[in-house]
Amino acid sequence: MNVAGQRWSLNAAAVLRLRAGANASMVRLSAADAKISGGHIDGNASAQSSSGTCVVVTGDRAAVENVDIGACLGWGIYVRGADNVRIAGNTVQDTGDAAIFAENDESSGANNGVYDGNTVRRTQRSGAGGIIVHGNGAIASTGSRITNNRVENVAQISIEVWGKASSATINNNVTVGGDMGISVDTSDDTQVLGNTVRGARTYGIESAGSQRVTIRGNTVDETGVANGTGIALTGINATSHSNILDQNHLTGVNRGIQLNVGANDNTITANLIETWTTFGVEIIGSLRVRVSGNTVAAGGSQGVALDNSSNVDILNNIFRTAQTAVGLYGHGGTTVDFITVTGNALESVGLGLSRAGAIGTHITYDGP
Image 1 (cartoon, rainbow, N blue to C red):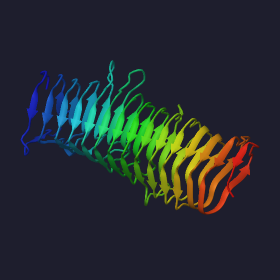
Image 2 (cartoon, rainbow, N blue to C red):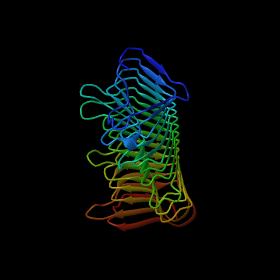
Image 3 (cartoon, rainbow, N blue to C red):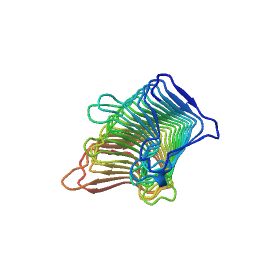
Image 4 (tube, rainbow, N blue to C red):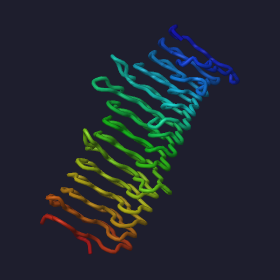
């Protein structure tokens, strides 16, 4: 579709099938404002040997709406360097690579895309995710809106903004399975709001090397997943700091919220963390963290565990049914210090505060 404004509206029963041995993309929207809607696109993957993306979008403001797309050897829908695209109401399933993948080209990002109301099921290759928006190096893909989608049983991450895909909104999606439900990777100023994540194998929601991310009002259920973590702040080349984790409901987790090394200046407030196994909140090697107004209930070892972390405030939380409410642990030459644990309510808790290893003298605790 190389004519600006061109429209293809397919009959509901229409099927476009890639011919055997074509080894090529099937439909291309290369012109601005082009649109395809309705019908079925069959990538005929079993009859291809090397490639076969079903829909390629390179035109600004192009749209793919209400199309049933499947059996693609490559991507289901691939957006490259196009701004303000709309990918909405589609069903994309049984693709070799990611179901919906958007990224920059050599000169521009895939900015301000809308990915709304799609259903994604099953990706085949290791590492293939569900809905992925990618920026690379100096070329960002910003401002994506990923909303109201359902993503089920993909090989890797269900929904991801990755590598300079900042200022995204990820709202009101449902994910089932996958290695992670939602990942915000080196994509600052993103909002993750009101999503439901079930059965992610590693992390329900991850902020990796990102800052000023708001993770609010989400439900993460890891029931039946061995060692599942509800929300994790991670980072290898960059750290996750200045994020807000607020009003989330985490259940059936091994670790409710985990902050890994260097996750400084984060705020954890008003979350409900229940039926956890090891730690309600685990903070590792991080500074200036505030944990306040949370309910940490029906748990196992420690409600909040501080491992080599200092300048942490643990205020006005409810700890219910745990071996220990708060545990402090300094090791490997690091001293845990400047900790305030006040105003917390303890119900059916064995020990209010435990200390092990190198603990400093600036510890304020008002519990039993």
